[in-house]
Amino acid sequence: MSAKGRPEREHRSAQHEGDLIRASFDAALHEYLLRLADSPLVLAQRLTGWVGRGPAIEEDIALANVGLDLLGQARMWFAYAGEVEARIGGATVARDEDTLAFHRDAPAFRNLLLVEQPNGDYAQTIVRQFLFDHAQWLLLARLQQSADARIGEIAAKTLKEVTYHVERSDDWVIRLGDGTDESHGRMQRALAALWMYTGEMFAADDVDTALADAGIAADPRVLQQPWLAAVDAVLDDATLARPQQANDQRGGRQGRHSEHLGHLLCEMQFLQRAYPDARW
Amino acid sequence: MVSADVGIGLPVVLAKPFAGEAGGERRGAWQVLGEIMDPEVPVVSIVELGIVRDVREADVRISVTITPTYSGCPAMNAIAEDIGAAFARDGRVAEVVTTLAPAWTTDWMAPEAKLRLASFGIAPPRSPAPSSIDVTGISPLRRRSVAVACPHCGSMETSLTAQFGSTACKALYRCNACREPFDYFKPH
Image 1 (cartoon, each protein chain N blue to C red):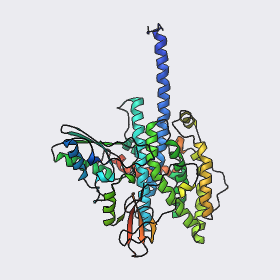
Image 2 (cartoon, rainbow over the protein chains, first blue to last red):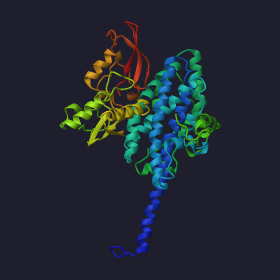
Image 3 (cartoon, rainbow over the protein chains, first blue to last red):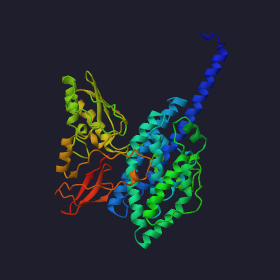
């Protein structure tokens, strides 16, 4: 019997229900953290593909540094995801950042379809970055106020870096869009090729809405209008036209990816899969 | 003791750690840390850089709290190792703890360190660092670059070459007067 005379079984059942709610909440949080981690990880891997091949040494270095920022951001989200795993299943099953990055297969990845798209020409790399950076900036700005203190801390830290990414991307979109006929044409084609993936950044599913209701996540839907306004302003300066086609290609955040991700992971994960526990 | 209760986005210059009220032992720990140079900017110590947030001592055991400059800064591991090695030389054991909040800002950099940066050929960050907190408009995202003085000849006739230089924390500039390229430690 509990202190208030409530039958023990009823008490236990209420406690069990609380545990279940907590467990399903942690599962949603874990899913959300993987989404936050996987997009910067995959984009970092894409960007570092330019190392040694950039069109100019400054750009080679810049893309490597943006990639490095994104990799650092992914690590912080992974570390937190691993801690939530420990809370859910115990310390023995919890994965560390390396295991999460190197030992999951493509369907377990939760990144946006946009970031797994190939580097293409430099226009495609810049446009992909530009579309992502603006959405990421708005997302992190919101997450600074997350009811989850850890998410708020990581967001505040990374927002400062993403601000530089946005500045850099804006400059390049304007320079190449309002450049030569050749660069303008390439930028317009890159926009047309990537636009279909942009809607995914603003689509909400049950995980997003449950956590947004709790004040922990940002509802992606509210980011769309400010994103469009920011993107439109830069495209306007760049003399580029915003594509009018549909942009609802999605599924990456639920684990349904284009074929490109598998190829990317083959390269990224090769060493750790072939030589488990390799250290250097 | 360094106070870290600073609101996010409100850069505040912290009390100079050397002037702390603690006794001889505490002073010693800060002095050891003050002699550890940043691996990538070897004229500035990690204390002057503002990344040492707290030091706690219990006999030979020392706990040092540091905060990363940038999320992906590859120097953080080296810095943690340097801290361990520096205290080990005194027969002490240092544990390094990382904290994220409040987020590091170049406004914590010591004024004398900024002067030394300039003499090293790196233009120091302007202060206060611009805020990136405003989400209501699009203009904060498109801050125009401001004039940066050339650390070689002092000319203000300089232009941005790339947003990222030899490390993530620096941008690449060139001087239109003396024609020298230089790094600008970005306000952050």
